Image 1: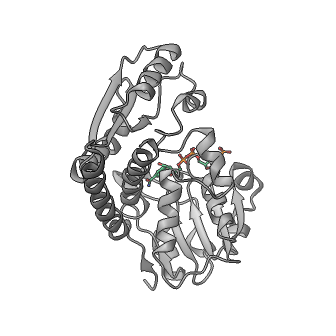
Image 2: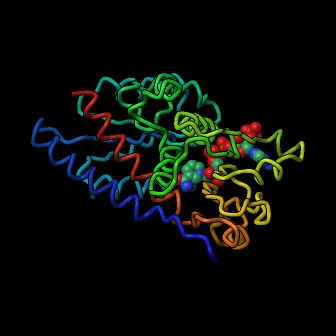
Length: 286
Ligand code: NAP
């Protein structure tokens, strides 16, 4: 396997070390402990692992963490009221809304009710909008995690590079395309219509930097990868009891210069960025 593995753990450790130091300094300066609240409705077995990881990381770094689960039958107005009371609570510095929410609640609408100052996942339109201007202090965690992995390659200059992002979700693909654009990469975004038109291989083949965030195992074939490309696989898929990404790993690793493993690539970094965002939100509120 000629490709170098881009492991999220190594980069995450550095970020968490800095976060821990900053939190100690902020506690000394203000006499307050930053607090993160994760708000959801009902039980979601699929999100349990992420919630446990949030709690473990917060505790390790000195952030108070509260998991609030409202009744699964809660209506949209009452959910918005719960967000509003967290917005007003001065002891709370960061708010996460756990996905998925019950179907009667409009997820996109909900993100507008989180105070932009406490929006540690950067889902509020104001925080999203700041990315357009290259001025965002709080970035969507997974998109920022991909950028950190690229930054960890010291020889990489993004300026003028052909970057292809597969997937255009609000939390990963779209913000990532803007973050790459802000670094003067030449960015192409592929999505469902690219897949349906059958032109996905064509775009992938020209990518010097390829980031795939779709959620379909084996969508990107190994032999589509350009020789020497950097491949970041965000996808998480369970296949025959194993977690795999969206890219055919073994074949892609034969051609790429760097590639993320799944698991162990983007995942561990996402939660580290979330903790960094809590610090940023805390500072913005002081
Ligand atoms: P999402 O909201 O479902 O978005 C998937 C995107 O892929 C959509 O833009 C969709 O387009 C596009 N798509 C679907 N089929 C396609 C095809 N055949 N060709 C090209 N594009 C296609 O998912 P997400 O939240 O962005 O997450 C994507 C994956 O990353 C999932 O596996 C998720 O579990 C994983 N993830 C990992 C982390 C981590 O920390 N490692 C964090 C977040 C997400 P349309 O919307 O037009 O259908």
